[in-house]
Image (cartoon, rainbow, N blue to C red; front, side, top):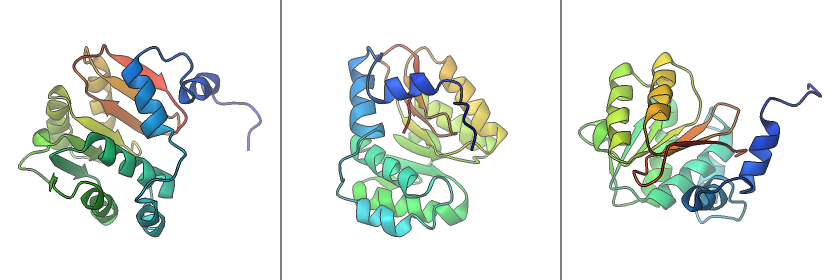
Length: 185
């Protein structure tokens, strides 16, 4: 383990506690969703599924659960490889029982999990973000994921939260200016 801190560690540490975040919606999102430390009602499900999820383990699944609870979307799209997709779908169906999964197109979804997505899924996710969707990247593994993140950062609205280890959450609020936050979550 290196004793030299990674670039941006101080900013991530400060932002994860809310210091330096001037947007009230971003502050609440950081404190109540990304960095919530109190127990949630579905953590026993994430504990059971944590071994099956290769992208961040139980901690990443807990974030997905909190995102589902916070967004409470009508439609959810899970654009991840087939084997870990079941973990995300079971958590989302337990959290949002009335949400439809895999709507006709990804662009109809209000909450999207994107990892190793195909280029057409990335284009559809960009359309959903323009409509105000929340997009969760547990890890970047493909060029289409990187392309989508560049396009999301270029939008004139929305908050982007990055943890420095590959996970990113984009919240497509049309009422806020485009801002990027480095947060430890």
